[in-house]
Image 1 (tube, rainbow, N blue to C red):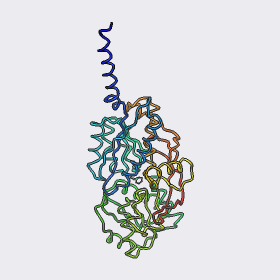
Image 2 (image 1 turned 90 degrees about the vertical axis):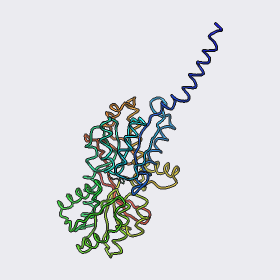
Image 3 (image 1 turned 60 degrees about the vertical axis):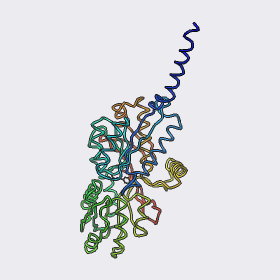
Length: 380
Ligand code: PHE
C-alpha cells in the first residue's frame, strides 16, 4: 500500500502541471482576424480590430464560451495590400487553426480571401465589406453590414430628394471593387429617377494616385450640382482639397469609405458640408449605442467611427453562434450564423438573409470639421 503512494502523487503533480501549462492554452477558442492595420486604409483595420478586441474582452470577462473557454483573437495585418489577405488567412487557418475568421473591411480584400475560407469550410464574417459579390463566394461567407445596392440607392435618393441635385459627376476608384460597385448602384437609381450623370472619371486608389486635378478640371467644365466620390478616405480627403483649390464649390458625396477620423485630417475643412452614408452615428441616442460609445472611449480614449462597432458586432454575433452551436465545429457554427434573426447589435438590428447578408439601416452624416453630424437614418 505505501509503495505506490509516491509515484501516484508524482503522477498527480505531472497531470496538474500539464493541465495548467499546455492543454489550458489549447482550450482557448482561436478566432482569426485579418485587417489593414497599416497602409492606405489603416484606420479601417485598427478601428475594427479595436471593436473586435473590446468584444472579446467582454466575452472573456463574463466567463468565456462553452464552459469557460477564452476567446483568443489572432490578428494578421494585411497592410491594405493585394496579395496579403490570402497569405494572412492561409496562415490563420493552417498554422493558428482558427475556428472562424473575422474580416475584411475593404471588399476587394474580402473577395481575395473568401475563397480560401470557403474551401477550408471555416466561417468568415466580414464586418464592413459591402460589395454584393463578397458573400457570393460561398455558403461559409457572411457579413454583418448592408450591401451596396442599398447604400448606392440611399445616396442617390439623398442627392435627388434632399439636395435637389439634377446633375451629378462620378469620380471612382478603378482598383476597388467597392468603388466600382457603389458607383454602378448609385448611377442606376439616380438615372432611373430623373438624374443625369454629366461626367464619369476615375483614379487608382490604395495610395497610388495623389493628383486628381486633371479629373477635377474636366468635372468642373461639366458643371455638376454635386460630385459622387465612392472611394476611401485617403483619396476622398485629397480630392476634396484639390476640388476647392480648383474653385469647385458643389458638395461632394461619398459612401462608408469616407468613414475615418483621418478624413478631416487629410481634407482640412474642404469637405465641410459634404455628405456620406455609413453604418453608425456616435450621436445616436439609443442606449445600446451610447453604452458602446462609453465603453469604447474608456478603453481607447477616442470616439468610435463606423468601423469600431462593426468589428464589435461581428465578434459578438460569432460568439453567440458558437454558444448556440455548443461547439466550435465550422459547419455547425455556419448553420447558426445563417439563421441570425433580429440580433440587437450596436449598428442596428441584424437579420442574416438567404444570401448571408445583413438587412439593416444606413445613416447619412454631414462632415463638419473633425465631427460628423447626424443627418438621417434610412431603413432598408
Ligand atoms: N464598405 C467598404 C467596402 O466594402 C468598407 C468600409 C466599411 C469602409 C465600413 C468604411 C466603413 O470596401
